[in-house]
Image 1 (cartoon, rainbow, N blue to C red):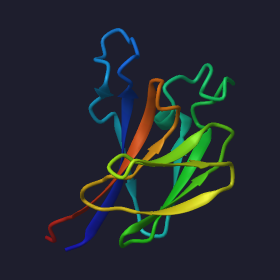
Image 2 (cartoon, rainbow, N blue to C red; image 1 turned 180 degrees about the vertical axis):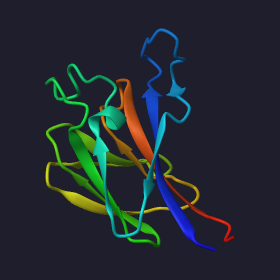
Image 3 (cartoon, one colour; image 1 turned 45 degrees about the horizontal axis):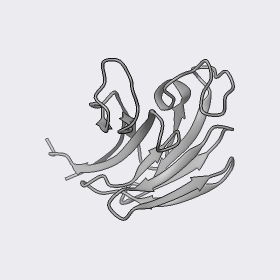
Length: 142
């Protein structure tokens, strides 16, 4: 069966955050999905990655179409994530408690699986921010 890879966007609401209408200490439901095609770069734009466009994590106004990061799937089990902007981009693995900051132009390969542990974070962990979770699943052939 063919493999499908995707990036699902969520928002993280830290325990001490106070956001009207959102419970603190958790994450929202899925806000958006970016489908990955083997070998093709997928642009992660500000509208999908950032909570606020009027003063993103860098404190500067952001255009909705600005590319924050690029993801490239190898078609099997690895996605390369490249930071392309001035805004903070972090790779995080909550199960292994690992976090890696990516600087503009820096790219890192991460494994993807059905469990979807790796995330790409677009803000500090103690503030409300959006993140993308990698996921891969087998599809049924028809």
